[in-house]
Length: 305
Ligand SMILES: [Zn+2]
Image 1 (cartoon, rainbow, N blue to C red):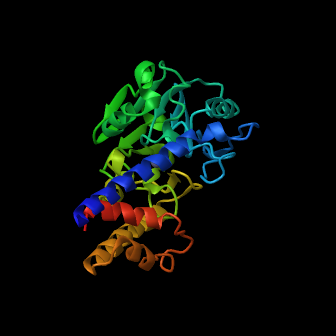
Image 2: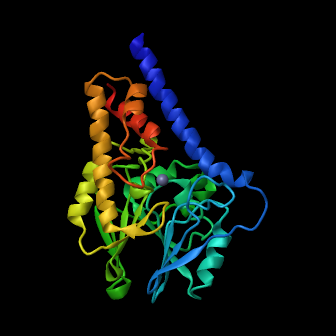
Image 3: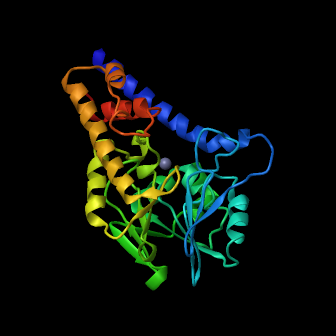
């Protein structure tokens, strides 16, 4: 009986997560009419960021941070924001270059990072991790007629495209936010796009329906920190550009969060008491706790105490 209840709790939790994610994707339709404005920032040389990426205000939230890398052969986009923002995105890119968009790299499957793959058409080259390609194939945006917008190339552990100053390295180290999060490095500029593996300074969103894992996240991060050298600037999924040092701090945060949840489970706490007892903000200055509840619940569901 108790077991049945728990299972129902887990299933309901999953439904809530799916609901929240599909709401985030469906939001643009509920937007008040008005110009869709995306801001652009020059980061270094031929690399720009399309911002307006903070969730919360549906009128201004355009989806995750997009990297715009202008190469000799054309423009490479890392992520494509929410559906409906494609023209605003393209207009902003045109303010810094007349070159065409030739390549899309998606950090992961979510609609606020893949929403305009279709807008840029099936002729654009598109690359993502193999698990993300499989996750995207389950999305309505990539079904029936739209299967042609699915990524054309996938990679498993590592892939490089371009050469010299235009080289881009793609890495995969394991599950975390989903099971297909890629890290995109621009080695000549010492910059990395971390996607939603480092979305914000708050607990991560663990999308268990797409293979996300709060248990794996700290280990995946540790592999990343050991496996990538020569980066000092990090583009997070949703907050302003930050540093490799802050990424290292985020690894410790995810590790402490997991340890706190495991500790609560060991003490026999239920998930509600665990949520109430976990506060990492005294140790992590500038961090928020708005997403701790959802993350703790996801880790509880994963560990099934
Ligand atoms: Zn995401």
